[in-house]
Image 1 (cartoon, one colour):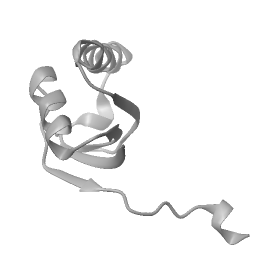
Image 2 (tube, rainbow, N blue to C red):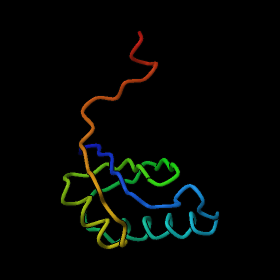
Image 3 (cartoon, helix red, strand yellow):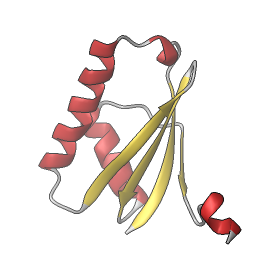
Length: 90
């Protein structure tokens, strides 16, 4: 399995209501439950006008299928090769 970061441009994303966040989250979870392959949505980070989502999947095509089924926009998909965090410091 590979880890991906997905950039979604969504004007006003940072102003979503709790109900909108819940609806988007539920849609994603429901789509994943209906997929017939291993797939995990790890978490998403929301800025003013974008959402960056971390997903674990077998391929970029699986990310695109999830997004199409959930009607989520995709602007970029990048495979994460290395994670750098405080644990790397030794």
